[in-house]
Image (cartoon, rainbow over all chains, first blue to last red):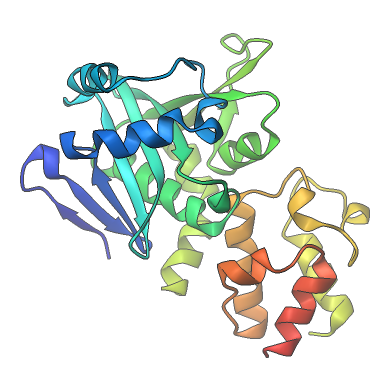
Amino acid sequence: MTYYKLIKQQNLQINKFNITLRRVSFNDLELLRGWRNSDYVNKRMVFTEFITKEMQEKWFESINNDFNYYFIAEFNNESVGVINIKNINNNVGEGAIYLASDKFENTHIVARMVLCFNDYVFDELKLDLICSHVRRDNAKAISSTIGQGGIEDKEKSTPEYIYFKIKRENYINKTIKLRNILNKLK
Amino acid sequence: MNREEFLKGFQEQFEDTDESLITFQTKYKDLEEWSSMMALIIIAFIDENYSKSLSGDDFKNSTTIEELYQILIKNK
């Protein structure tokens, strides 16, 4: 059963599929900065400069609003990583994810995290479309995005990145089996 | 479900991977189609057919499909 808790927008917490998504708050910034500056995360990012405390706080000021939703995902009380939708405009936003550790890569935990998040984006934020850039050399991420109903927009893709669009209907149809699995497993 | 049926069922979970690439010796996590979504689908396949829930450790402790199958029948 989904449980949406909204004390204040900044304290938004979502529990679904045994995943807890907790909206990033000011108190999380140093934790996130540590992950973000780690070699594991940094080398997967477009922006690869070292992030200072001041840069991190400035970034948080820019995303702490109704156009950007960044969540820390937890599974069994352990932090898994960050998942977000940003630059929401006309019911369209850009999604992204990074993991705190390679031990979560390609595990069912990440699938739970993505489905929990996408359900929130489509059901509660009422977005029609999630867009994402996926590196062409990241076969697992490409497979995962297609598994969520993602379709390439070739006009916006580049030699380095595939530009995916996940429409609400495609997402729902493509993930019926997965959500049935999760509802049964718990 | 015997050994061969397990392999056949495992192969059927993949939409875009040729069956010939999926044998008991296959390092399944190296398959291009393997992802977090596939991990979940395999968990469901095992649950439906063996009434057993695979754990994260079961995946971590297996490299080939044979090893995953051995974990499965050992704990059945």
